[in-house]
Length: 354
Image 1 (spheres, one colour):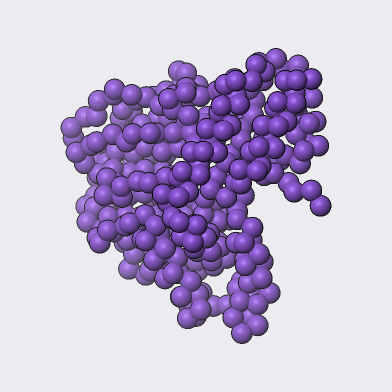
Image 2: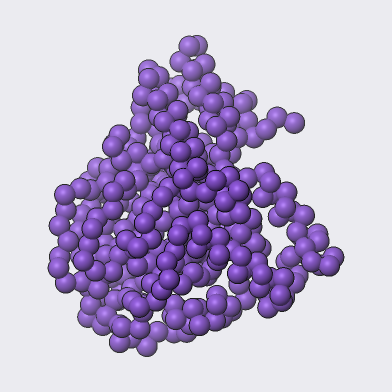
């Protein structure tokens, strides 16, 4: 059977070894019990949770004083939890608006207090990352989105701020080196570089909590989940287990430094074809191009039908761009093999040579 090359933006491709182990666990994880029928309070799953947290800590070099949580609700719930837990009554949050997900985070934050937009790239349809913007001195926290899956842009250099730094890293966490000490709260949905949809990783500096003066509902309070070790309610067992397998795969591969080199190589390979193929053009500003989500267009739209047919024949899946951008989007997360990118490049070259 011919391999399908999965360029989906998420849920996305996972390592083959991870898929095999995950599928086996459905039938027999512990003493002939399925992973999805064991108690989340049993020792076997407790070991899974602890190992997943230890891998996060090791791979990202998370220092003492930070808690690692596996929650639910995706990044979308974090859009609410962040201001609920960090914005004081009549307080102020500073947001960098770089795309659809940042815009949604801003919308939720406005329900809790004053939101100041430090910079906004919507005028260019979010095709670039704002630069040379100023941040007000008094605020409760600053929020940014590291990578934009829809528009194919990525923050290459994070601002240095004098205050609490929050970042949505849903689509590029574990893809490149970051200094955790520069951030006070990081959140990321699992369905890009970690595992299947269902769990959300939150890394939070403990000392920033409990200072808003708000009476926060238990389920939305980070301290609740810290005190209960992510077990306040029944956790998404399967998603956490597969995330653990993926993080173990990443560690065995050589960790973040190894995958970062591979990711940059893959991105450079594809961007080079886009820039040198007379039929295609990139959608994002070159200096802000994402190494995870490569957005591009056909200059002559009349060739789209032929290109789509050729992609289908080559078993290329998930390449259609988001409706707000159009064109095509190749999501090349950690598990994407370079061979799949070469198949896509071959199709692009064949179209040009027709």
